Each structure stands twice: as C-alpha cells, then as structure tokens.
Image 1: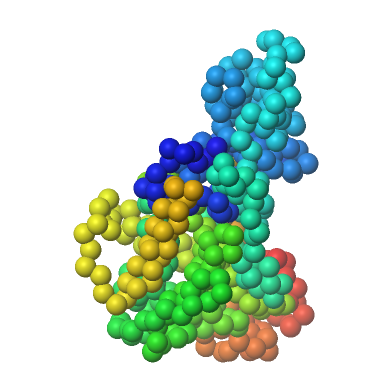
Image 2 (image 1 turned 30 degrees about the vertical axis):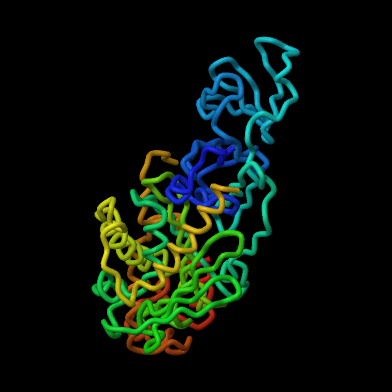
Length: 336
Length: 74
C-alpha cells in the first residue's frame, strides 16, 4: 500500500497527501496495449492499458520477489514478471505461477491496484491508505466539463517539490514580476492588497483592488482532487472570447519532483473557438510555454530550505493558509 | 513516446508542424484581431485587405473562413 503505519507526517507532507485523487501522467503516455512505469507519491507504479483502452494502475512490484513488473511483458489482459514469469492481472490478482502451477499465490489479489479515472486527457488515481482503499467522491473541475469551454492540456515535469508548485499558484503577485515580459501578464499594478475569501470547496486568494488585468485571483478547489482555477487576460490579438483560464493540478512524484498539469481553457464557441484553437496550436502555445518555463527556472533554483528561512508579508497569506491546511492533513493522516 | 525524466515539450497540441500558409494566416489573423476588431466581418475584410487569401488563392468569405478555421482548429 502507499501508506503504512510507519509513514510519518513529514513523509506525507514531502510526498503528497493520501486519501485523495491525484493526477499521474497524461492519458496519451499509455497507448492501447502498452504499459508505462511511473513514480507518484514517492512510490513506483505500473500503468497498464489493454488494447480496448481499459486502464489499470498497479504497484510496480511482483508479489513473488519484488521485481519490477514494468520490466515484464504485456500479455493483453495481464503482465508477466520477467524474473520468474509470475503473471498478474489488471486488478492485481496473481493469475498464474508458471514455475509451480497450482502454487497458493494463484488467485490471490497480492498487488495493490489503484482506482483510476481519465479526465481531460489526464490519468487521475485514488491514493488511499490501508484504511481508505475505496475512492471518495470526485467532482471534476467545472471548466473541464462545461460544454461552452474548450481546453488544451499542457503537462510538464519539474525538479520541484509538489508543494512549491502549488504554492506558486497560490501566489498571484509573482505574475506582475516574474512574468512581466510575457504576452499576457505585462499590465496592471505591481502593488496590491489581497484577501482570502472562503468558498464551499476551498478558498479564493484575490486582489482587492484589481481584477481582469493580470493574474489577479486564484481559487483553491478541493473536490476529491486538489486543483486551482485562475484567469488571465488575453491581448486583442487572441481574438474574441475574453480571458483564458487555467485549471492547474500537481502530481507529487516524490519529495523532489512534480508533474504539473495546466489546462488552458477559454469559453468560446463556433468560429471563435476554432480560431482560438488554430492560433493556440500555431503561435500561442509556444508563448504560454515560455511563461511556464519562467516558473520552472525560478522554482527549480529555489534552495531546499527556502520555506524554512523566509520573511513573509501580506501577499503570502494564500501560501500560509495552504501550508497550514496541508500540514494539518499530513499530521492527521500519519496518526490515523 | 519517451519515458525519460523530465518531459518538457513545448508543443503538445499540434498534430503537425504548421505549413508556411498556416503560419502566415495565423500571424495575419492576430494582426487583424488587434487592429480591425473581433467580429467575423472585420476578420474577413481585414484578411482580404491584406491580400492573405485562402489556400487556393481566393478572397475569404464568411463561409470559407468558418470552414477553414474549423479544419485548422478542430
């Protein structure tokens, strides 16, 4: 299992909260009939997709001697460990022990199998602990289910602890400085006052004196999966449809690495939708990428003890709140 | 599909490298949106005034522009 009684609050805080959904990798990373090794929440996993598209996620560990199943062979509806040929089905049940037919491992569900969903081109998995193997309800981000919104997923892998990647999103003020030379965040004041506004699914962290000019607000949403929603104005060159939004999620890969998921969405339909998509693919995606790279360069350069030696001010209330929330949950999960 | 860390791919939405025609059309479309407006009539007029025509050289109509955006943007 992903969480044992030996797991400390520090370990959970470092490698990701349990008992919730997290994004893992884009769906396209696992083709039909293929499998892929991934790391998430500090553990090794195997994504396994049948040729009909059905996906499963197994602990990457043969129940026999612990060899990685990801080095084995895809047999259509099961995987065969390379070491001794032990076969494991998509739900984690040992289907065959070729070296000793009738062995008592056969028929037993000995490999952890996580519930998975595919959403907006990403694989989400439920990382429950031993006491919570069954997934909790998952409410999907509304911009990804709204038929009037259209989204592109951008996925990237950063050498950054997962919390730094989330904190960056709960820190809108960096937009006016780090991204000042970008195509979308050049405008607006470089000073601001912020407030926290509670919602029934999380909280807004927003400027009190400016909206619709830069990266002026963000909402943290905890709906079974943690995600943020935010909105950034487009220049007139992007055509009709107003600002673009971002739904952001972070996969805690391990204590030092993250997978970041950004769905850039816009509420556009008909020819306006088509022209935005055309411009996005041809010209805008590259500009968005350059902005994202600014975040990566800054966050990857942060010292490991960055959050231990800080002098915070009013703009950091959103981050402080986030840490308190996550820390409390890590403590609760470690003593549960 | 590479599985080496890190995955950092600028272009994740494209199915092909845009052709010179597509680049020209996109750049001109941005210019038109900036200077002419966001209505369909503005766009068709702006593209034709700049003599950036359809792939077969014809001036744009609202219908042909819609169809081409649908082909290129879908």
